[in-house]
Amino acid sequence: PNDPTRPQGQAKGGSIWLHMDHGSGTSGCVSLSKPGMEYLLKNLDPKRHPVVVMGDKSNLTG
Image (tube, rainbow, N blue to C red; front, side, top):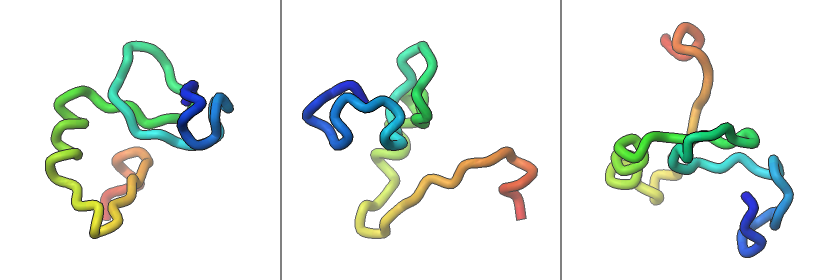
């Protein structure tokens, strides 16, 4: 988040953002491939208040 028009201004690491992969590391954000982001934008319903759950596969499987 280096855009001062966004929450947290220029404070890197002030929030966790979901964005497309830009080929370098993040400051705690979650980056997705373009197809992955397109899938989320087409399928997530903001009215259902989606959340991102992170962890390794063995800890996330029930």
